[in-house]
Every structure is written in C-alpha cells, then in structure tokens.
Amino acid sequence: MLSKGLLIAAVVAGLSFVGTWGLHLPPAAAIAWKGSGVALLALYAASRARSLDGWLLVAVMLFGALGDVLLETSGMTVGALAFLAGHVVAIGLYLRNRRPTLAVSQTLLALLLVPATVFIAFLLPTDRAAAPGIALYSLGLSLMAATAWTSRFPRYRVGLGALMFLDSDLLIFARIGPLHGQAWVGYAIWILYFAGEALICTGVADTLARPRD
Image (cartoon, rainbow, N blue to C red):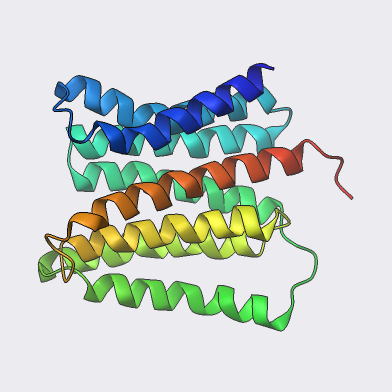
C-alpha cells in the first residue's frame, strides 16, 4: 500500500506541475513542486528496494530530483552535472543487468544511438561556445539510454523511458537553438522527461521484485 500510494503521489505531483506554470507561484513553491515528482519516485523506489540494484535505482531518481531543483537554483551547468551523475549510476545499474542475448537490430540501435545523439546535440545550440559541454553531457545521456535498451529490464518501459529522457534533453538543447521561443517545447520537455523517469523507475522496480532467471 505504501509503495502504491507513493507512486500515485509521484504521478500526480509530476503531471500537475505543468498546471502551475500560469499560477505565478512563489519561486520556492514552484521549485519544490518541480522536484517533488521525481523525489517521490525515489521514495517509491526506496520502499521497494531489496538489493544493491534497488538502491542504485533510488540514487538515479534522487540525482534526477536534485537536477530538477539545481536547474532552477544554480543554472543549467550545475543541474546538468547532477543529471550526469545520475546517468553514470544508471549506466552501472544497466550494465549489472545486461540482457544475455541481443538481436542484431537491437545492437545496432545501441551502437548508433551514442554518436548520433552527441552529433545532434553538438549542432543544436545557437551559442557555439556551449556546444562542447552539451556534447560531453550528451555522451553520458546517450550511453545511459543505450545501456538501458540493452539491459534485461523491459525494453518498452525502461528502454522507452530512457529514450524519452534523451528526447527531452535534446529538446532543451533545441530550445536554445532552432526551437527558441516555441511555447509547446516546454510542455514536451517536461512530459517526456517525467513520463520517462516514471517508466524507468517502475520498470526496474517491478523487474527487480521478481526472481532472476
């Protein structure tokens, strides 16, 4: 019951955040609301953690919540470092849970995802001075998504969630480039990001709850 309640609270907090954008909330309240969705996902993961892998999932979610807050309080670079730390932990989690066999198409997707993401991310920002840092961050982001796709966790939950996270970040970079000023981009960024985190969290937690073959 506790886990279910935490998951419901996380989904409500995360999805309702976009509804606060026109309310002109005090900055502290808006930041707390933004961080609450993934923070509650971390608590959900903690309520189900029974192994090192379970606690690694908790760490991934905690770094995500920290990144959400730091983006608002300390800027993009500091927030990105928190997310990057979460990607590194996630890569470790996924490598510990590699899929025994992969189809050729699955392997090719994982191999192409990394250079393609880094290349696209490098091209997106109008401020070319920011491009190398964005490309470096995107290397960690794309490795996270590639290892999620090749892990034993359900591909259409965890793998898809990781790809949604990746797409969300590419839209952030596009917002400081060709999509600057497009109102819909902010909504797409948040929905892809939070839905991706929720799919990752529940997919990993459900898999870890079952005996490993």
